[in-house]
Length: 144
Image 1: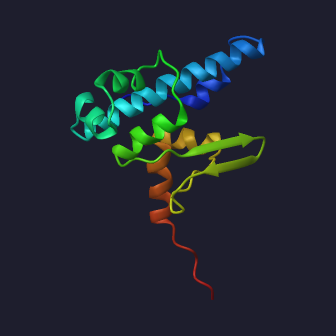
Image 2 (image 1 turned 90 degrees about the vertical axis):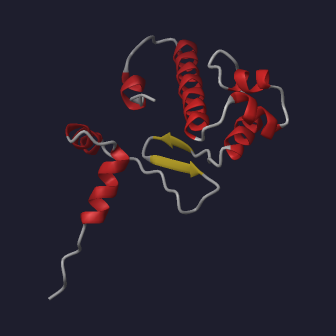
């Protein structure tokens, strides 16, 4: 699955109309989420029919969940992800404030400066890979 650069997309000025901006954000998130859902199912080696059986629904319902053309309710998405042993993490950012919603304490989303994202890209790494490598290689200076 190709990764989308959500930050670059958000910076593009498509329109000044707040409703157009909101519609674009909703469409982007719907496409990204459905791509992730399909990717997770495929990596799990499951067909839509097998996921439908586990969810107790018809295969058409799974097809709709994996379609960016349909609206999805949060409960259905969470149930789908639960079947695939995946978690949904949500972050909300306003200015410098970053709020994270997660059912896993050990998972932490971080907001990195654009310069860090650029360094990761320059090295052909995802931001996650870059941060993990930086943490792994970090050694505090010993006190004298």
